[in-house]
Length: 252
Image (cartoon, rainbow, N blue to C red; front, side, top):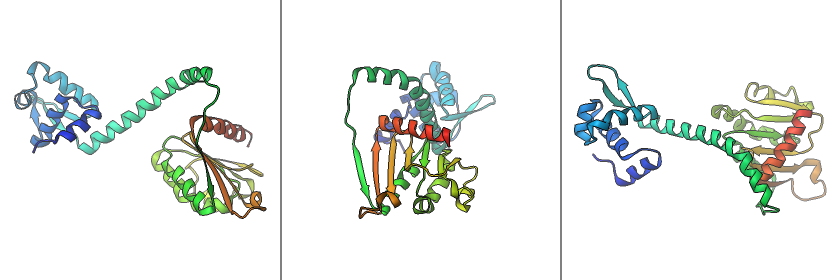
């Protein structure tokens, strides 16, 4: 069974060359082959086959079994795809850290204003859904200030626990009076926690870009809503609120 054209195109977008595809496809079907037989079977020139096989080993597509002659076996497609994803994420982090400051410096020099979308969300249920989604979709960082502990925290604790599986260690500022609360104790080791007598607001920043600021409780004594949220998804709003959070964190 040959790989369909759309699958080949998808593999190319993931980093496979034409030779990589034919060799990997052949090994998936034949399970184990040496370089000479692979060259004959795939029509990859023998003068290049070792170079291509070594490249595929380095990329994590195949494994070399030492012997006389040495043979090659394919890695599981799941392992290959996970390896590509992890490598892409690593390269994104490294490269984005290198280019962020110089590019933002140029951007700031030439720009005086820019519009950004702001959404207003009404009601506790709507804001909790949005808050849970921001937490679940965080992959790099999460900063959180919780003022209305009893209104918010019990509903989001399960999402916070799942962050550990993605190696996201949130920084959370809680009200001082809840420092020994059993739900916070249950999160021990899953993040960094600090406490303030009266945190100034409820503010969640996910991945340094998505921001949700929520007003509830005493803030809304004179309005009909039980909770109102302002959400923004922009690098600048994330940067500014992150600075605010950093200042509060350092002084907590």
